[in-house]
Image 1 (cartoon, one colour):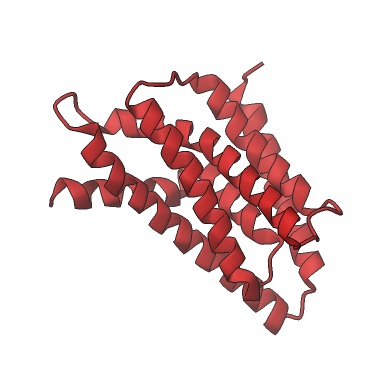
Image 2 (cartoon, rainbow, N blue to C red):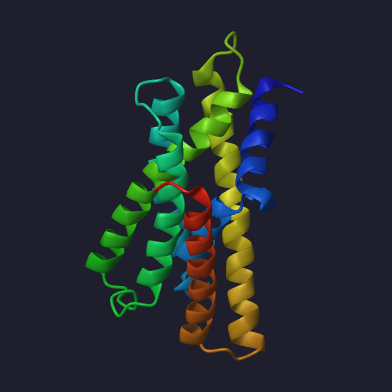
Length: 194
């Protein structure tokens, strides 16, 4: 197996690993306020998140920026919690251009934080002899493919809930965002940052 396919697989497995579910929760929270028919908007949001985490993953892996592991382990669930709380706020229901722009900015900023979390895992994988730059690209593609799988499953769950079980979109959002917020709070308490 080539280095490209190995690191592609490692990136995919890292984002889709159920035992390290914090990044999955974030992507699920990003999707919660959208109907399945708004999948294009969700893909743009996830792409904004990818841009953010790709930047800090590269900068941290190349040792250009320092990563305070305990702080990042705390901030990742904070981003998840804030996204879930935003979903149930009155502002989340706005889908005008200005609101979408703000959501994209938050996705990029929160992606910057998650990228530093990815960098810890990525740094453990590579040896000193390997070229970090060559391995970052397939690792990031693997993460993006994993995120797209999570988006697809989230939007499928939304479709089934709203179309088959006739659950209203607001109820779906409250249920998913509430569950994600609760899990994020547990993750924050587990980090023992303070």
